[in-house]
Length: 74
Image 1 (cartoon, rainbow, N blue to C red):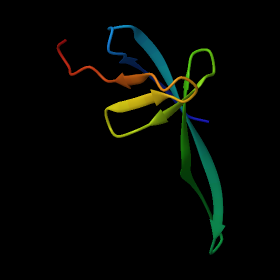
Image 2: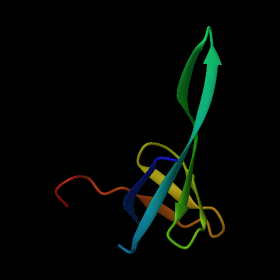
Image 3: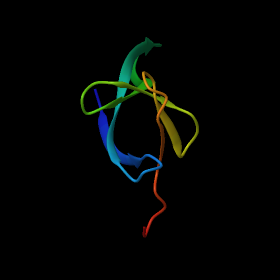
């Protein structure tokens, strides 16, 4: 299961580490095996679920705390 990690920040500047888990789906057709990416799920380091709002915005599911990516160079 491929895994990626990045940081996002709340309005107070607190940093949260978000883990992205991607499932892989194995398919077979016409005698050939293919692996395609399935759904992604987002979680904090402690396992708490995170909802993706858009490309740069997230929210912690249980609390609703809004998180944003920081632009490069900040």
